[in-house]
Amino acid sequence: MATSFQVTFDCANPAKLSEFWAIALDYKIQEPPPGFESWPAFLKAQNVPEEKWDSASAAVDPEGKGPRLFFQKVPEGKTVKNRVHLDVNVGGGHGTPVMERRQRVNRKIEQLTGAGATRVSEYNEMGEFWVVMRDPEGNEFCLQ
Image (cartoon, rainbow, N blue to C red; front, side, top):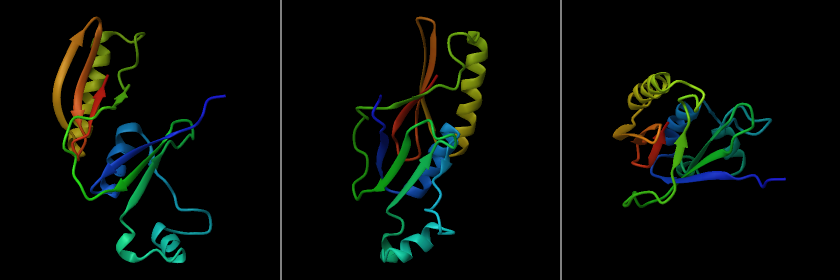
């Protein structure tokens, strides 16, 4: 049996970045624990000071299959290229004709640039097509 995991992002604005990645992956923002109508209600009940309420956020797969993405606020900004990045598979895989894969990738690029992403570069090599992007805080990822 495989070990479960979450992907953690250090960032300046956890709420904004979790919303972006929820759009990118068709995830949703994690709901507060049972018995609480909102995260502020939960945090208040846990005696978390209000100035720390913006210190974290999470996005989850609505079907519960994919890993949880956790976003934690850190004081320093991103300074170098990621050593690990996500490849977001929106094209449909090898069974999908190349032109259709390109169209799907381009539609997702349009959606994500509207949500704050930046297009960096495009590649078409060895039968593969992918586009390198940056999220609103500069983290690299690929759409393929």
